[in-house]
Length: 413
Image 1 (cartoon, helix red, strand yellow):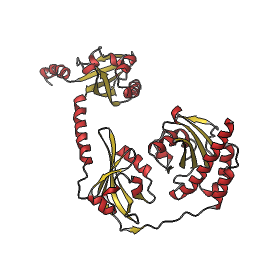
Image 2 (cartoon, rainbow, N blue to C red):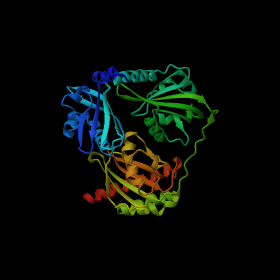
Image 3 (cartoon, rainbow, N blue to C red):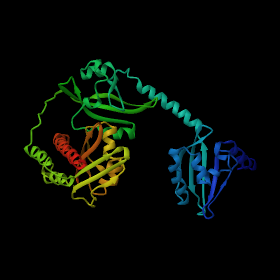
Image 4 (tube, rainbow, N blue to C red):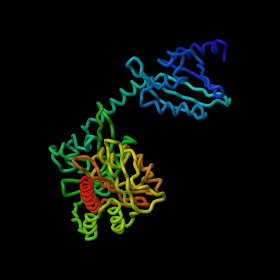
């Protein structure tokens, strides 16, 4: 490299919206390696990197924990890549942070680049893509559902022809009304929200009396702060099959259990009585009751059964990240989790996995519109529960809930 080229490097770096910096980890000191303002970060002589209180005042609130972790990684000499936002003069600026340990153990170096313009450009591209996804004028069947209530918003003529329904069905039909078989919609949606796109074979309800196996592509996107689920039928895999409705068989054991719950005088007694009938659900190892106080961000849990670690009766957990929150947000009648180790819910990793419980079925009950009771049957095995058991679980949960209300009314007298 020539002398002229060497001299031009600092000038070139200073013209970029990028700050190069170095940490002396032995002295815990920060220095900038060029004179770039790096947007608002240069206003206080790069105090952003030196003073945590100052940094937290500038950072967008959601990014404070992210930056705390990045700063901790610097000290541990761990490479870092992060994108964060800064609030200043009623505007939000975006930055990309990169850091790496040097060959000299004493130092850690990095760069910060303002990427606000890039983010705006990318957002425009994504908005255009989301606008495209709103379009259902395709030759193949396409339907659009609202994310909040999973109601059918609109569909193209090919979709209506495939399912044999009238256009008037929009607004009254839900995604759950169309999907049949053993496929569990909550798990599909959980994956979709993470991956944004999912191809899967499904059984769709056709004309009320038939079902058809198809290859579908789900896409999740947002537009003007509203979430949407786009369902496109890519291929028809099987022929139409007639739906044969199976009437549930009344089990005397379930009926007797529900009657016995009405005679119990405590939560522990009810859980014990359900546990005694565990053969109704051959893989059940534990029965739990969650007492829900959503406004107080509190869930109180009671249990009966064998776990890897004991659970103290009345243990409290935050409502956020629980089964109850999952059921309420997704407006579910019940929830079956086949593998807690694949879950992203906080409660599964706080409670179920540590206790050696790898699948469960949960049924929620309400008082004056507010969820108060969740009965949960748990197993040490994965994939232990099925849709065919929901009717029995619901009967038992209702009996538990009704007796619980009587007990609490009696306590107030």
